Amino acid sequence: MAKHSDTYVCQSCGAVYGKWAGRCEACGEWNTIELEASEAGPPGSLSGGTKSKANKLDFTTLSGSTKEAPRLLTGNNEFDRACGGGLVPGSAILIGGEPGVGKSTLLLQIASGLSKGGASVAYISGEEAPAQIRLRAKRLGVEQSPVHLASATSLRDILATLKAEKPDAVIIDSIQTLWSDALPAAPGTVTQVRACAQELVRFAKSSGCILILVGHVTKDGQIAGPRVVEHMVDAVMYFESEQGRDFRILRAVKNRFGAAHEIGVFEMAGDGLREVANPSELFLTGGDAAVSGAAVFAGIEGTRPVLVEIQALVSPSSLASPRRAVVGWDGARLSMLLAVLDARAGLDFGRNDVFLNVAGGLRIAEPAADLAAAAALCSSLFDSPLPRDRVVFGEVALSGAVRPVNQTEARLKEAKKLGFSGALAPAGAQSGTIKVAEAETLADLVRWARNP
Image (cartoon, rainbow, N blue to C red; front, side, top):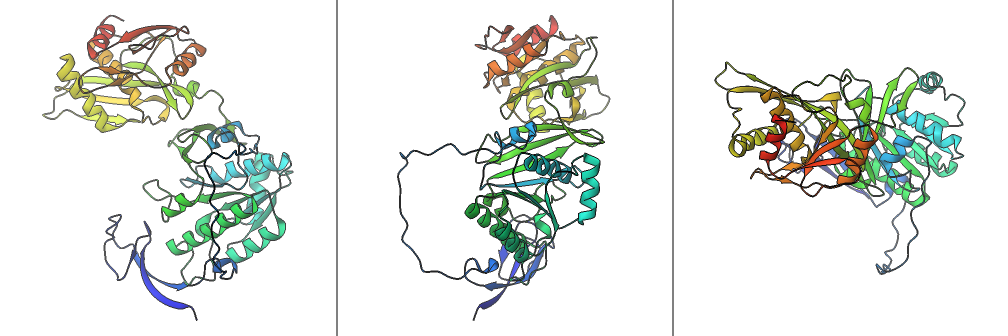
């Protein structure tokens, strides 16, 4: 007989406790620990498997030849780029995003593209009825695509159907709605999410089927449920949007078959999501008039170069503690940069309010944006507009030195393609593409900002 035991599980992070507590020590959340009765059964019991005799493992070496993983193209270049060049058979992908960002719209378009390419695709929804999905497909213009559509939440029924139909790809929308009758926990709990994801990933690996899971996100923007689900899958992607803007960014934060932090850029329209082949045009403001406090940063998102405008405003403050506000960049890094400019370049920002904004709603995380942010700050402080045909990039050290960054040539080529004729970059960043002015320290930047 199976052994029954009661455990207390945090519904936020999945931590397990022997008794109830008001606060989870793992994630710090309050009132998230709930009682869940678990049944200890043999591996594979959720899908009807039986316990088998243990077998000895056969070891191999690292020197063996292995073929490159084949790729299945979806017909959507931006999605394929974010996945690393296409979908790999037998892989499992987890896609998360806020409600209404367009996850279901994107996946329906992906299912249509796969099916038109000759692949057998199963779209299983646990949140919407088939009639609702048909209406969306008609609005997107993909109602004639040969996609197999179903609405179900029972894991046992879903696995039995997939084993009988043997599709090339299956989309589950969403993993939080599935439940297994082998577990007494309610749907959406940590136990159910973890167990259902494990069984579906096991099926994908054994059958060679491409598995795409949709995951809900918490108020902090993280995928809800235990983080172990993210460790089970091969790729984790976040579908992001900025409130009030039409563009969407699909960002890969984990990818076993491609580059992490690769992005795909889309624009939401009435007929669905449209690919944006040149995202730099979205993040650069229009107009030819040069204004102070604006610098164009040549950044890298994954393997893609992206140009974005960084805007700064420095104004005298009447407050005892001047304000510091930043949008699209790390606030702690702005504070560090202001301290370096004060200490190493002799600039006085202590009596000024400082506002920094990344145009277009893009969020920048790479340190290469330091020099562009410093250029925008100096331009606003001196009220001296920077040339509109120059890009800026480089990392600023605490000593005031400008450090080199990676993929310099790709940044300069992207700037040349968009019509820029020069760049301010770290020393040694010479290129035959465009003219480069070198900055070894912040003193070089200050001189350039005063007389660009």
